[in-house]
Image 1 (cartoon, one colour):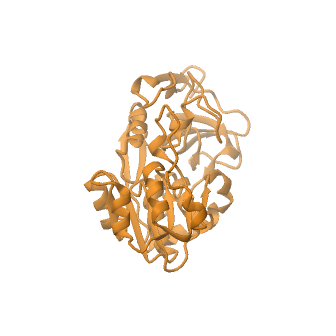
Image 2 (spheres, rainbow, N blue to C red):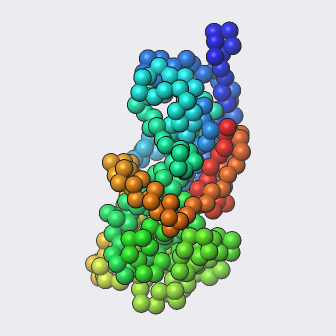
Image 3 (cartoon, one colour):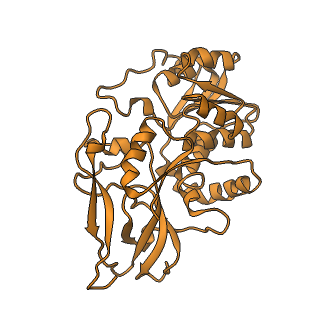
Length: 339
């Protein structure tokens, strides 16, 4: 990049805020000039970007735990890439880093906002999935939010997604005797048992999830990892044993709702069964990344932790990827390959 040949980058901007389910018209592909990095900054050529369900909430102009996306500006999200210019001694040119300025082909950011990742044992993109925040979310949910104990029966909803598929496998490593997962469609339920080691897979499209869970766990469950909310949470509250534990990770069933979703009709089970229902935001637990990476790397190496990815190519397909995640199109982690 020189003064005579400025570097340009394709970016995905938020063109408008959706009402209900987002559409491609809510996004805009923009070509923008990339600034030179300033002191303490690096220029990264993004090679992979993450697409995650929580991004739907940031498309709304509503107060939440994370600020909304700005209109007519690039969206944000996890990405990994190669440092192609550096004005920071701590991060050299050629390093592979993870950071939070995805949705663009090139990113300029402060070096202390990036993390250098080791790609000698696993590919860089793993740090957006199983070794990134989805994996850490599952780990924290099952070690702290709703701790698994030896012999437990664990139920995971949206179990074919990035967090859910990790949660089922981690639950087993933490001592769960029975692991049940639910997902939509035959291909996903097949993946749960054949690829991710779940004992039982429930297809919520074929019958009411409450009926299926009651049959799969006639003696009840001890832990529920909730990625869906709605009828799945209601089914789990019925199935939970006394002193059961719920890790509320997400509620994708209501992300596109235009009116507040009704609460579970059986919420009083929290009282009568002395249940623990607790939310988890991974941003509260970044200090546990070293612990998780140490354990997860070993599990990956010995083959007891597996991952799958759904990959779309090209920055222009990033909106399609997000709409796909919200519609359940992915098995495992949804990624966009940029380089």
